[in-house]
Image 1 (cartoon, rainbow, N blue to C red):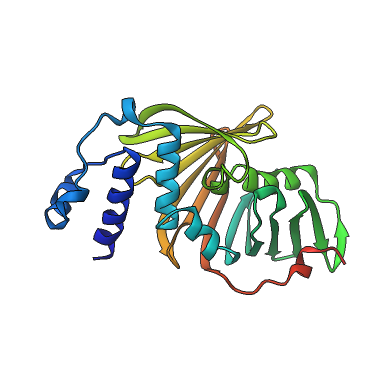
Image 2 (image 1 turned 45 degrees about the vertical axis):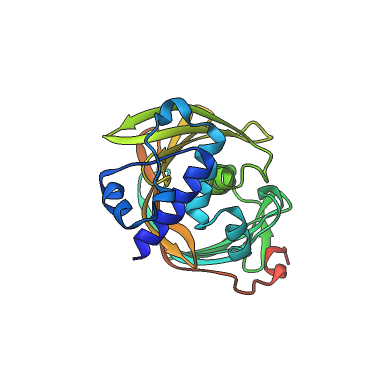
Amino acid sequence: MFFRFNTFLLAAFLLLTGISIVSAQEKTDQKSKPSAVKPAPVDLSKDATAEQVVESSIFVYGLGGRQNLNQIRKTTFERGKLKIVNAEGKTEQANYERRILRAASLEKEKIRVDQEYPDAKYALIFNDDKVFGLFNDSVFTPREDASKGFENQIWHGLEALLRYKENESKIELVKRDKVMGVDYFVVDVTDKQNRQTRFFISAKSFQVKMLEYSEGDVKYKRKFYDYNYVQGTLVPYRSVLWADGKQVEETEIQTISFGQKVEEDIFQGS
């Protein structure tokens, strides 16, 4: 019933925006739906616009759209495990906690990630569009690669797509493509600082399955797995990052919740 309810909402929304999806499963499901929301097949590669595709994706992630996302995700508290391949090629594992205080746009966001390794524990903080670190309550300047990696999670993450309007970013529907048999809408999002991220959005589910971006001469690719709804919003519980074809990071969420009280002073240096 939950799947059919979600599909009903999505079909109604896509009908209003002019996009229609007809898969084998949906043809079966439509037998139990009112005829008023049955979408007629269209050539999406010809008729879809970048805004229609992205807005449809936002609708799916918020199970109703950006208003639902903004209302539910006022704060985020996330715990999980992190695997990182260091400069020597060795895999390091850590437990992490991510806390987010949502703002009108990403540049005003407050984000803190505490990482606990076997021999060290520290936090990276994004506040007032700047990155700094905390170690034993003392502020430090992170290495450039650590700062860049942290910033890339923000500027080249899912929120870059889901909040493109709030960030005043430009979107472009590049093409419709098949990768490993999966049908994608390929959308470029370019923010005000000309940081560009390419998103591969499933033409069937409107979930982002992977994204790509470049940093200098290095090409990065992040894939998203194990999607599930949390408090009415869609979350990928696992993601893997590659740099020039080599896996460099894997993140697995263990618990995540939205709307808990988060004190603003945790985003300040001591």
